[in-house]
Length: 67
Image (cartoon, rainbow, N blue to C red; front, side, top):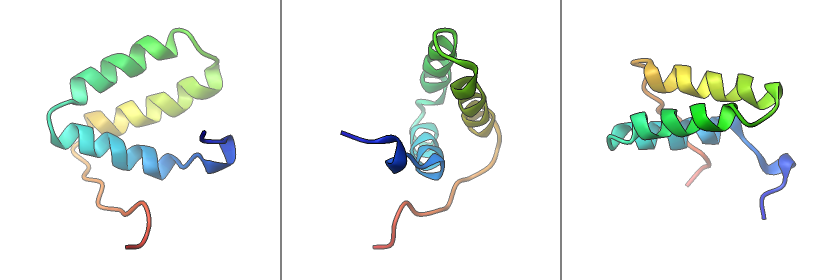
């Protein structure tokens, strides 16, 4: 089980970019939209940041961890 202390927004951006790279961006944005309608405003801000990155031309080239 993942605890809050283990959450990493950079990891989420990396995973989102992976989905975008393989043509799943629209589905992911739709899911984030649906979920934000059901949760508190703190998470809404975070999800909006993720959606903005998904809809941008930005390429995430970071690493989750060293290999």
